[in-house]
Length: 192
Ligand SMILES: CC(C)(COP(=O)(O)OP(=O)(O)OC[C@H]1O[C@@H](n2cnc3c(N)ncnc32)[C@H](O)[C@@H]1OP(=O)(O)O)[C@@H](O)C(=O)NCCC(=O)NCCS
Image 1 (cartoon, rainbow, N blue to C red):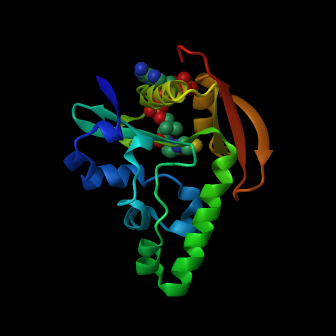
Image 2 (image 1 turned 180 degrees about the vertical axis):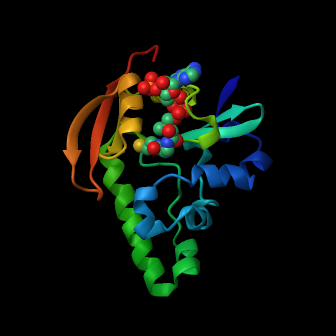
Image 3 (image 1 turned 180 degrees about the horizontal axis):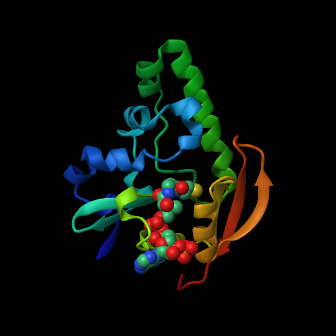
């Protein structure tokens, strides 16, 4: 039985569990040139998570997936320079941090953005991804939005199909960010 919980509703000690930070920082692989591999992303962003922008799926007490979202200029990660400097040094840390900030600010164009979605490999194909997408749309409705947007990399056919099956439709291709993405939109009803 899958239970979906808003991260900010978890007890503080659970938010500090390293496996949760590892899961939530596992996305944004397309930005590896700026924020490194999985372990590096966890060091850069793992202590900067806005838990009110993350929904977590739990199965038998184990976190098996997450969806992150962004609205009112607040996404799942606080922008903190210090971990970038500690990781990459004074100059490269600042350059990579600036690149990451630009990537984050670019998305402010979307009133409500489904920012990231990931299900642990062992838990895939059981409906958890769909349940997370639906729960994210319900969050958007609760926050008063009539539309939810997302961006999906052109080469991620699996995720694109999942979003299409969950009520999103394809919008235009975007060349920025690189690699290019398709933006998608779902109009929301009050019972989404
Ligand atoms: C994309 C991703 C999140 C999908 O997660 P998932 O939990 O496997 O998704 P679902 O189980 O809801 O759907 C996958 C398929 O499982 C099957 N499925 C769905 N519910 C099911 C159920 N209750 N029982 C059995 N199979 C089921 C369906 O065939 C579904 O395919 P469909 O959407 O074409 O109908 C996952 O593959 C992932 O984490 N990928 C890597 C990260 C990624 O690409 N993220 C997206 C970035 S834009």
